[in-house]
Length: 339
Image (cartoon, rainbow, N blue to C red; front, side, top):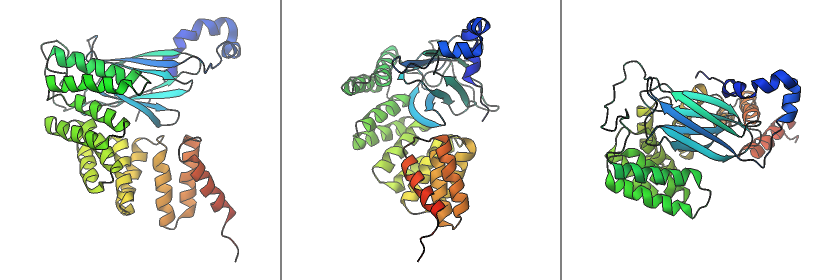
């Protein structure tokens, strides 16, 4: 996956300062300030157009490939992530039929970044229709009421940090769903909101309705699989995640989530190729390295397992598996206990 550093976009903003002060001095004048929240705003657009599509999946990774949030573009093709900590981030845009977009952003010295991202259709992909609004997209609510309610619900769920606001966002999405029952992203966002509340049964029901309404929406199948994994309905999760990979074979999160399904079923032989594929597609996504290390231990290859564990710590040294991985490495390096 080709990457273009977000630091290139940041260079223009600090260029004059560097001319007068020098690089070292500029660094001293722009120290990270954890008390100032960071934000990322973006505009998706088609070539020769100022606007873009609604409902495109936008993933926010922090540091070395650790996903921290996801959203969908609004009715004007915009997205926003706020209340971020100083760190390096990555924005990934995934949509079937389009090239995956990835941009790295350094928010250590800059409190905000705006991205203008042009979408490129894959060769041979089917062209989309042009709705009456003039915004070219197959992912657009059918009427003004649905668009307005979807936009309100999405804004609340993406920007608010108050758990009480989730119900307000859910209310708007329910109105949007009623106004346009065929718009898949509403179901995906609504289902994700229920998952955040740990209301898994309601999330599953909404996601299944969404799949019936839009059989080609990757996010619906993927989130349904994640939900079913949490409900420990692994047989159904396998089916949903396999369908998501039929829609987007390059979705490394879906490969990894499916591997978790197989590992839960103690079918590590089926899990291994999906873990390897996730690493191949996105080698900086840290969690699959732990899973692969565990499998390599089962196969009797502790040296290769140790390499995977060390790679995880290199990518995500303070991640959720870091303490367990460090403990495992200490035991492996200490060697077998003498009799």
